Image (cartoon, rainbow, N blue to C red; front, side, top):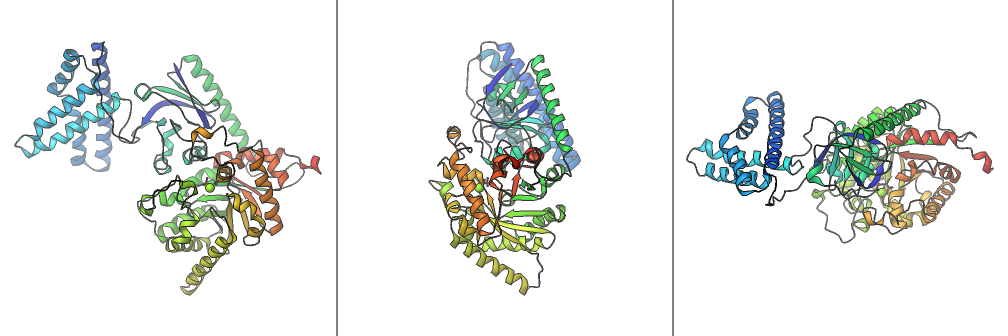
Length: 543
Ligand code: PEP
Ligand code: MG
């Protein structure tokens, strides 16, 4: 049993098989081994697992693409039964005392060279196959998968780091937990893990060559990854998991209840989503609406600018599924850690302070207008709000409103109907906090983005894991900024919500309610916990 200490990005317990995800090319080093029999056995195990994987791929391909394409996997499997190939690997291990990875790589290269030199076209084409299958075995030996997530059972997924665009590509039903070597609490992978409600760890320095395929436990309370736990440990964590599940059930009993404090003050508790596929968990958790639809994920999931119609379909789906409940769509927040290659943005020294979010939209209005048209068209089907990220001045809001009016005029002239859309801004820069009274007069609502507000107020890059001890979102500076925004927002006639991660921190629910917050928008998995916390607050003691 080995323990790796990291930091928790989302609490809870996950128990299951570990899967190390690798995106890069692996380097195969030649090393001397002492125990040749054990090394042969290691190769045999890897070879058997590779054959199992190939059988699975063969079956899948037969079903999905037919026999001709499936045959490739059978050819790969046959290499792993070829006596010449196997003898070559065994004898290198036995005679030269080298590691299995190197023996497989050398055998694969030799075979590929030999096949490539043949006269027969068919045999020449097999050169690539033998390299492919050798790489599969090497990946297994190195404890990584080079081919993305190809496990059938749900796994604890380990990775060096995951970009938001990679995280969204995984089949969520196959992920029990995310564990990354790098990353930070406010990185979007952590946010997505919270959104999915699965335990997640960051800054875990695991040993990729020994943990892949092993049984593991993620303790999202203590931030620990346990590899090959003993029976007592498994029993302890199973009990903890059952307790968690019961608590979740209890929270389910809150469904349909109002979010009202003991002294009768009611607020909205909404959910944050990244796209239509999150709606299931929004409905499961009985959120009152969508307080933040991070629309940039539609862009991150695509290889090119999503068209107006593609966006319209996505927004419409969400609006229709929310059946009249509020849906607040944030316009694209690309830039900083959310990079889209096809935007062709310059590389920047300080991307968090760079050309991002609304700044891109104002400078490239054709992209902005396409998105606004799609949102306005979808607004016809329900109750839609639009909010704009990274605002720093009244002037920006006026420019935005002018573009919004142009879009509405275009739709009018085309006879396209749309709903009555409220406009709001994200308050996530200190400038917006200081200008909050003036800004409130321009818009219908504010949504405080505490993730970026913490970053910019405390001058702590939210992606930098070394700053975790400094980026304290409970800092009085951040709390005062929130208080000021709520007070000024109300004075200027705007309602004020919080959609950053801090909104889900139930230690602060009472504080936020005392400040007069009107809405808290949190990951779907946190909705019920926040609602429970709201219902326990009694503000009358402060009257
Ligand atoms: C925030 O900054 O708090 C926020 C909600 O936006 P994001 O995390 O997507 O930057
Ligand atoms: Mg933000």
